Figure: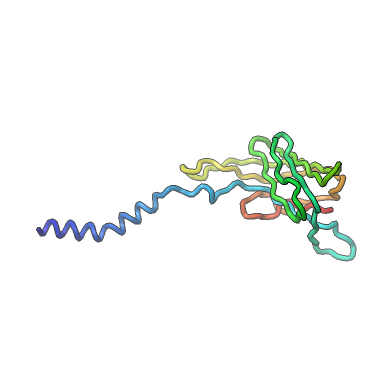
Amino acid sequence: MKRFTRLLLFATLASPLVGGIASCSQDEDCSLSARASMVCGVYKMPSEEWNTLHQDTIDSLTVTAIGTDSVILNNQKNVTSLTLPLRYTADSTVFVLNYGGRLRDTLVVRQTNTPYFLSMDCGYQMKQAVSSVRYSRHVLDSLSIATADADIYGTENLRLFY
């Protein structure tokens, strides 16, 4: 009887410890390490009257990536910023910005892709950084790189000036 009482007491005291250890080994949520994207803000071209950035709006925008069959934005209205995925399998990504009709601009984004090990459950992820951008100037006036590193937090990478 004494042995049974000791075993019962040990099991009662040890159960929170065992539960705590078991809870530490639960599956990792890989969705928290979502794919990083390049964020582009849309701005008015600065003038001599004001020296601060003023956000602009694109009335209608469709964005595709050359080399894929996907449409990233499909006739989106009143666009003030856009989030674009960069390719993992190449060192550049080409986007076509279609403003409606025949008005288009092309962005050629050169990026560095650096794989890093996240965890046993989630495997490898890719760190991406914008190194340079070439672009056409049909509607787009200019652009600047605000932050090179693409992330999952919505940090602005490019500023597009119209």
